[in-house]
Length: 103
Image (cartoon, rainbow, N blue to C red):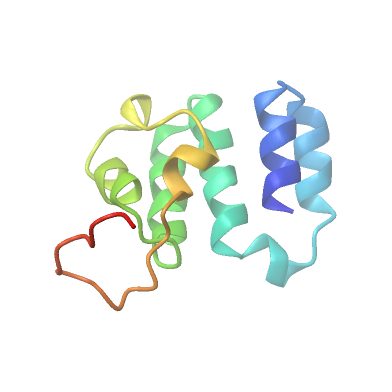
């Protein structure tokens, strides 16, 4: 659902994105990945305060360095895409530890 919503957002189909999101079951609509895309949609529409609230909610389930950085910045300085914010999702088991070297 998040990827479909992100595709609609990136292609500028805001009405279709709205309709798609409204049709999602509540449990899906509350999923961190979907909430993250909704935060980006709010940012795109200039709703910075609402976007920041949604990003903080999404960050409870998506823990990446990009998300942590975005939480400290205004929405205008966030990465443009869902992919940029959600890649390298940590399971939380390495919190505070140095990153492992690539294999």
